[in-house]
Length: 125
Image (cartoon, rainbow, N blue to C red; front, side, top):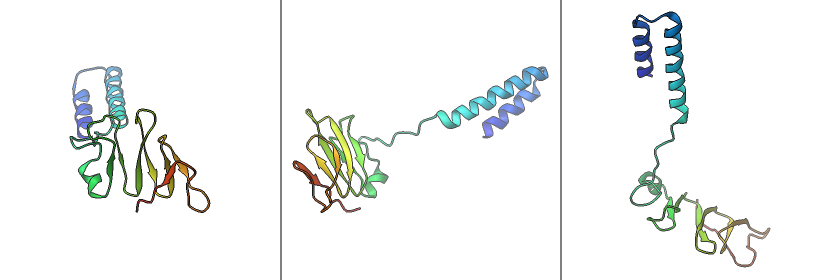
């Protein structure tokens, strides 16, 4: 915000016409708006994997090899699922859901069980 105020003051201090000054002010304002909303947050991925030290501190775990670009960070209370033909499907299934060999999460049955080939995620939140 300080940079925006500095830019406005600089524009107004020049000997430009009002039209030129308003155009420059509009450009500065547009740049500030785009900068505020278009910037993506810095990735938390580190050398140790996709989970940041802060996430790990609160129980998160890396799902997949640390060096694999497709690995992801599963929050505490979820189960890591690696499946698919080449192990290329990765998901975090919430506790109480079933995870299957194909890499999908499914809803458990009414009695809390899972359909054939699937395992109940019992991770503690």
